[in-house]
Length: 237
Image (cartoon, rainbow, N blue to C red; front, side):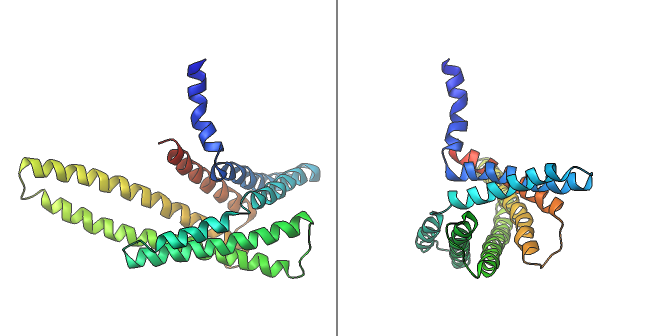
C-alpha cells in the first residue's frame, strides 16, 4: 500500500502545479488540432471533426482561465531579474517576462470575450497583439539561449586547455567541470529547440509563415511534452 502511495507522489506533485496541468491541457489541445486536420483529410464525418475542434476550443479557453493571474508572477520575475549580473541575460529575462506578462494579460481579455461574459469590439486586435507579445517572449528566450551557448563554448575551451598542463588532481577537477558543462549545454540546447519550434505557432497565427493546422498541432504537442518533462523534473528533484 505504501509503495503505491509513493509511486503516485511524483504525479500528484506535477498536477498540483498550474504549469503541470497547463502542459497536459496544451498537449491534448494541440493533438486535437492535429487530429481534426488529419481526420478531415481522411474523409471523416463532419461531426467527428467538429468534436475534436470543439475539444481544442474548450481546452484553449480553459487554459486561458487557468493562467488568469500569471501576469503578476511574470512582473514579479522582472523585479527579481534586476539582480542578474550579466547585462545581456538581465535584459533578456526582463524582455521575456514583460512580453509574457503582456501576452497573458491580453489572453485574459480574450478569455472574457470567448466565455461570453463581455464582448469586446476590437477582439481581433487584442488577439493579434497577444500573439506578437508571445512571439517576442519566445525570441527573447531564444536569444538568451544562443548567448548562453556562446559562453558555455568559451568555458569548455578554457577547461579543456587546463587538462593539458595539470597534475592528476587538477585533471580530475577539470573532467568533473566538463561533465557539468556538457549537462548545462544539453539543457540549453533543449530549450533552444523548444523555443525554435514554439515560435512557429504565433508566427503562423500572425501570417508571417504559412504552416497548416496539422503541422502546428504536432509542433504544439511536442513542445507541450517537452515543457511537461521540464516541469516534472523541477517538482520531482
